[in-house]
Image (cartoon, helix red, strand yellow):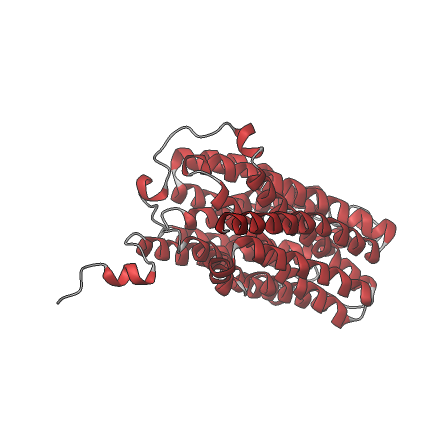
Length: 415
């Protein structure tokens, strides 16, 4: 007896439209590699350029990193609304073009010795990253329930290449315009963004029925945000990204203050970014097997370990291990929180819920980034890590109670 068509797909959990979802996940992962590289350039250089332009004692030295993150927060809602009008593909390509413009502005600002203009350039880069943040949601659209967590993690796995491309670009272009330092990296950013435009031209949006966007209506935004499942998902993502930004922004400055050089700082950020995205190859599978809440809780525990390691000493090894743990914790926490959100929302609510989620999350990230430089200069490296521990403890306790109560209810139903 001949097998029925599609029987193999049913046994493996694959659905017919997952072929397009896999293709889009690959395209978006490659684009993520470019977009993530752009942000890692500013993460590596933002504080150092600030010191170069303003002086080592300035409290505003990390402002350019913060303006990048503020740009992302400001771009979340416009990016979602714009793509609702012109589509994902055109919106993503426009976002990459904004990143290219931001790179050229930052390049010109450094050459002209203008810190305010440099902040404008990093703001544009951050605004474009709001479009990049929609990649993970676009990958989930049209994917089956089985493949959806993997699609999200595959896209974020593109950040593994970003963790190599960004810091290596900083090192390779360091003396391109000597004696003016760091300018070459932002000229390279403009080029990398144009490469992303070319990659994104291969993205194909799923039809409305497959993506779950055909239906209209849904709950009011106030009711969506009052849903405990949505609140917990946002809380996990918010803290995971916020504390990562808090430590990561200050780490290069702390390393320089401890006598290490620029290459040491760039290398540390490189391993941090690799740790952020390398686990993405398996995070989706782990979520499918153990549940998003469990993986998110593991991420929060890893973030606690990062803060503890940073408090244990100020040798180069302490910085590197703390940054690696920070990246791993972010990966599990942020992807876990994203998966929790996709499970909590209804198909017709996706665009509004995702826009609100990213606005809240990156608003928090902007706040932690803005406070990171001032906290470092006024209090030092250790208080930053104590703040990290306190912030992570809150959602970890809530998540633990939620998981325990939920497990108890499921056990009662089985009984």
